[in-house]
Image (cartoon, rainbow, N blue to C red; front, side):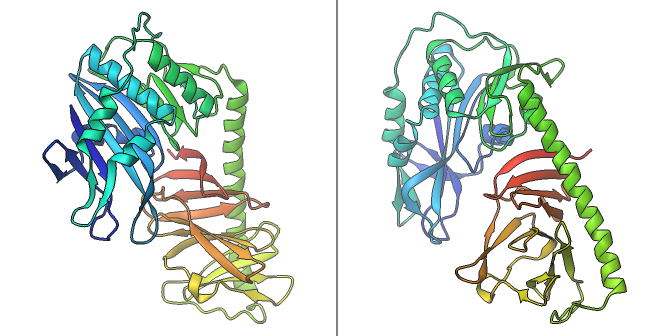
Length: 402
């Protein structure tokens, strides 16, 4: 058995790293090869799980487990990830089934958390014995029946996680058919197409719309639409994306004519730095937001009042695209590094408060848009991806542009 832990210490010098954990050593290593092979299937920053066979090896990878006490130097909660790699055997596979079921029921997190402590000299320390004890204390059950071999996907809900845990506890997994079998994937933001591409036997994701396990054909690689409601929801999301970006294009054309044909708004000083200014108009044309000399300015076109985020929340990013909602209280900014930001106007403090979304784009954000009610955000990037977000910064849909 091989055990690998990925976590961080308090000080800045003890950033996230992988360590191989043995009885006598905890050496820092590069990312294990099997982790690199399968991590594309997981949103590793959030609680996720993968169980797979790879030739003569088995891997169980759990990621994004929040530490209960440990924080880094900026006060952020540290997350733990653990990989167990075993030689392939029926006995070892059943051990990992039990371990995966424990994780799906939320009973593994605190055991891992207890085994990892802060260490002044090395950043963190892992109790090898406590990790081993987790394995040795697992239930040993007789599994008479084998689970059906059909491939199924569903939404990542507590009920579906519980069903999957019960299956792992009571049935043997289908016999190995290929050199590589991805058996279980449970994660946050991963598209249905990604799980189908890897022929995941049982998969749960926040981006899958099917509320119950739904079969797909691995030869056709197309979901069998037993849940028509989920399909309609995906269709509506796609249509929403098209409408948002169509509106964004119309706004861009309007802005071009606006700045060419009309003088600057009274009370709004517009300067054009060498890199050029960026501006966007809300749906309905009531507000305009601009990035001028690094300051985000929101102008109400029906008055001469200008509001601006104060210096303490002045963007520290290179803004590449902007959007503003209809009442001018929410600004969305895309950055050259792929980050999406949301600034919300706080009426009590009379200023904008900013927060970053989970970074998903690889490279520059090309455009952003926001719905009229300010609850749905869309972004497109140089990586060819289009994402739909909610106000919390969570992705609710994603598309790969072809």
